[in-house]
Image (cartoon, rainbow, N blue to C red; front, side, top):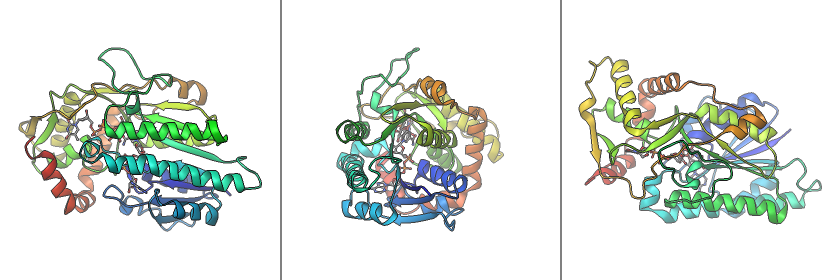
Length: 354
Ligand code: NAD
Ligand code: DAU
């Protein structure tokens, strides 16, 4: 039986990974360690929370004693590390929280894994530490045909991407220094159900449904490469099991959209699904002050992953975005629960004066 520690499993991507592993591998024990920050939500995992092969632990990855205790109690042999502060705008306001969770938290997990695995009679044999990272560590591309590859030099610009870059370096250092069997993947923008509605796609769907302005940063010309979250979860499963130790794999959708073009698709689709007249929500589109240090373009070359492990995205974007918008419109209660209270205050502060 494999015992796998998944961190950040109550968040957006983590909840899809936990669900996939709990359902697909009944003989694994999945331990989900999550602090339940504003972004963590156990409602994301309601359908599997009673599963026999699943345990939830509320806790902070920076709490070294707690993490060491989990390794010794559950005899963890695999880690899939997703816990992080993940929103660029929040990192601009509060960089310390990002350094703490993303850097110190990752180091705390690495060190706990090292101590436990080095003390194990089999050592690192059969063990794996898989760190989930982002394409933002590579910096920004110009418009054109260039892509981020696994060889692209790190050049982070936001406190978020700087903290993720730092955590990636720590993971690789633990391989090079201690021989820990690590893997790092760098993925592009994910979209799909259960994403916290501060990120572009769910924020805009929620605002359209509430007839609130849609704040487009700058001229809306920045480009992102969008991947359906379940395709990312499938890639994580494949790489966790078949990826080569010490390697890096880029994961992406080969699906670039200029923000403003994507926003028009969201507006049109929402209006259609809400039964509004065509163009009814166009007036909500509002150009606001740009994000500081806003990276112009991200685009991933995922050919290594396709060549070596046979992965490619399974869902066409047109189908994925329609499925996603329907999900948020059908799950009003989920949205209402997390957009009340503290989030309202954050929203006011974030967009006041923009
Ligand atoms: P998210 O913000 O939705 O979820 C993060 C989860 O981590 C939450 O459940 C939160 O409670 C938990 N968490 C935060 N701090 C913690 C701490 N100190 N201890 C324990 N748990 C803590 O994030 P997401 O969008 O699902 O991203 C997951 C991972 O994937 C992150 O590492 C992120 O950098 C990476 N990533 C995200 C994207 C994307 O488009 N969302 C793309 C590429 C990579
Ligand atoms: O590329 C991977 C990254 O994608 C992940 O590592 C991050 O965790 C994730 O948050 C995401 O980062 P982005 O900054 O690209 O995502 P966000 O949804 O915040 O913004 C997408 C684009 O939309 C970006 O160019 C900024 C713009 N935007 C965003 C918001 C929230 C707006 O124009 N208006 C908005 O209100």
